[in-house]
Length: 261
Figure 1: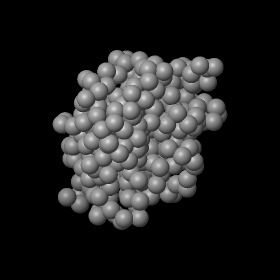
Figure 2: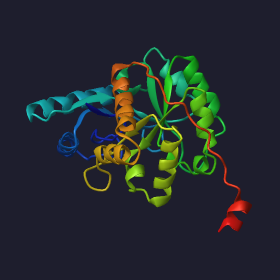
Figure 3: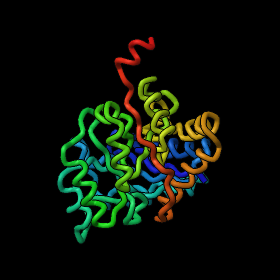
């Protein structure tokens, strides 16, 4: 069972597919790569897209009906990729929530940081989410420029119970060698809990999840790859799991590295 916890498969919600036919084709490609469950996570509150939970659930139901009709063995579940914003906690605990948790299980929530900076309210908001019983999952922090410069920000978050998802394409090199090397560093230091596709289409942003798992199995171990797969399944079940002990990254001594060269 391979579960994808982050992708943009729902049509006409964000920068994913334009219509249901494209979404079905994406699901078929996912099935061909061994993915059995997809948590659809359209962008929410990122300055460009605002999604309605009811519309997401409605489109998930329609897509699942089409997949059954066409005998494509993939189940779609609702979720969101929520850009971290000041009212996130308030909106989640409303009587009728403005946002969705992953698989709509009221526990895990996928949150996204900007790419170019680390908002000053990040730690406070994540802590507030935890106080309300949510488990924040940080989406693709390897693509945040501040975290790449200061990776122990991630270590400190994990020590406080935040979970981390990196993108399959970061591991396979889709986003360039610099991000690939950083993703490998996070894997080596046990600063990763989930791999997800972040797929948007079948061409430029496809489902690369199986390739990433195979790379991890070959580069590190099959046990590490299985651990990451099992963690993603726990999201669907709404269950907690044991995490690998994170390791703090040591900063290189630039003066020493100059003389070593």
